[in-house]
Image 1 (spheres, rainbow, N blue to C red):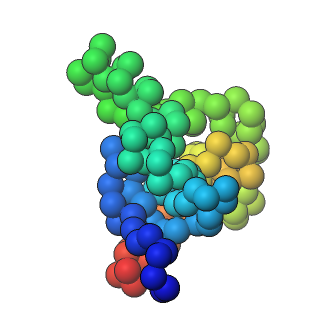
Image 2: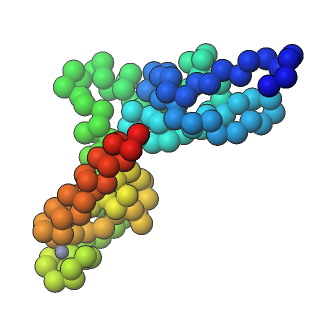
Length: 151
Ligand SMILES: [Zn+2]
Ligand SMILES: [Zn+2]
């Protein structure tokens, strides 16, 4: 780095409210953008300025819903509400098929998330029978753990 270039601080692994900076994304219009993981698991990209000023605190829905609902209902748990709402939404738009989408034999029992990221995206969900769901869940956990170990 040459003299005169101001020191570019890395924000990686820093925590800003709900967000943890995971990597540098890109620079644009003299702004530096960072990929951040929200506590809910969503990845968003925002600038150094927005992070340090507190303008961006979460993926966009977490901070808002927590401050609103959290005060009214002390029993409220962010993840459950988000998950249930998502489930209800998927349920409405992804009708239950007659048979499990995996083994095509047994009637489905559960809605299962394919990527483990709980996307609001129908293609990320499938109806599975109990057995298939448990098998896939087991695999998912192994996958998540191995990812953590690499880090
Ligand atoms: Zn979030
Ligand atoms: Zn099955």
